[in-house]
Image 1 (tube, one colour):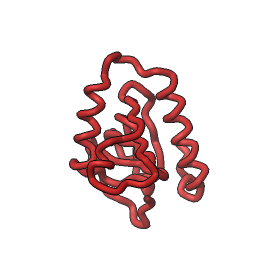
Image 2: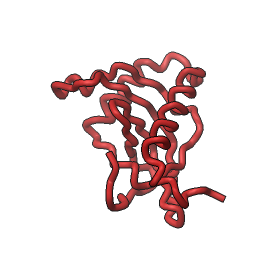
Image 3: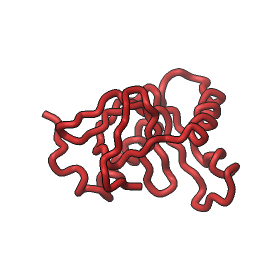
Image 4: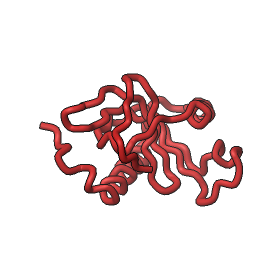
Amino acid sequence: MINDSLPSFSPHQIVCLEHDQSYLYGEVIQIIESKNLCWMRPLLLAVFPPVVRAVDDFLEAKELLDLRFTSDVAYPLALFRPALDTEVIPLIGQLEILDETKEPNAGSKQKLRQFLQQIWQDNQEHFLGTRLQ
């Protein structure tokens, strides 16, 4: 989902970056207004089945990846939306159940990189003039 007007976020707010059936949730660290970027710390990546028919389907991710120990992300502000408590709290609860190790695995880092690359490829117009120096 891409917003036409730039959203307003606060530090520590949970936001979502979505592509197809994949949802990246993270905590806002800072808004870089001069570049219209949102600097966020990833929490989790949830991949849902292609067809969500009921609220319970949305609570049951097909794949849930813990990204709390991966690199921060700075992406165009227009690509983010606020995360709803009702969508993210159950996922964080599932994440805590899965939290056996405190270290990210290489697969999670690779899936995050692939997800971000897909966002970049499909939304290149939002990346013009956003380069950090």
